[in-house]
Amino acid sequence: MALKAVIFDLDGVIVFTDKFHYQAWKKMADRLDIYFDETINNRLRGVSRMDSLDIILERYDKEPLSLAKKEELASQKNDEYRELLKTMTPDDVSDEVRETLAEIRKRGYKIALGSSSRNAKFILERVALTDAFDEISDGTNISKSKPDPEVFLKGAEFLGEKPEDCLVVEDAEAGIDAGIAGGMKTAAIGEAVGCGKADYALDTFQDLLKILV
Ligand code: BG6
Ligand code: MG
Image 1 (cartoon, rainbow, N blue to C red):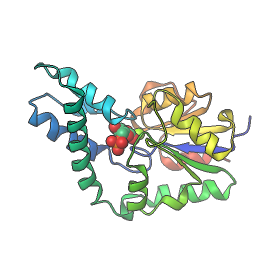
Image 2: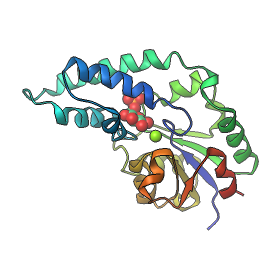
Image 3: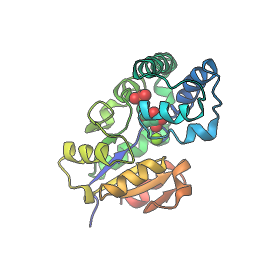
């Protein structure tokens, strides 16, 4: 079956906001005296904000926190994360990514974003990339985060394409699982290559042009 559209994850694929997530979660973890490192941070890729908090709190050994307290912590983390996002500029998207996205569109494929982040539109504006996407499916239009396929299924629906005609590009195993669960083709880049579950493994972003001929 010929591919007609590509649905991109954002963090870790198009931009590298994962380091900002790490810094903001690390601050919160330090305040609560919880151990947190890059390995635990890798488990947060593609996972919603509240689910990420629950993963970090697995190592919290004091009294269980109320939902209100957890919401306060997540909101504080998000405020700190957004302060870091404000430092982003169009230079935070590589020429390779910009040119590859333009070429994919030139070749006739539709392009959507499929990100668990509620900050996705803000990030795309910061890096001047909103126009590269025909549709945006993000954390604001889903109730279940990856590995549930909802964000990608919504992306395909917004594009008017069948899931099986879409290629999902992901740096997270949870995202590859979501693409597979949605009946889509999958391409892994970065961390996700190691899980070995994707249809394609990309060494570089522009390797997509070998798949999307
Ligand atoms: C995903 C990230 O894109 O968005 C996750 O990979 C993050 O690490 C999730 O937790 C939610 O992001 P936000 O911006 O809504 O807190
Ligand atoms: Mg990602």
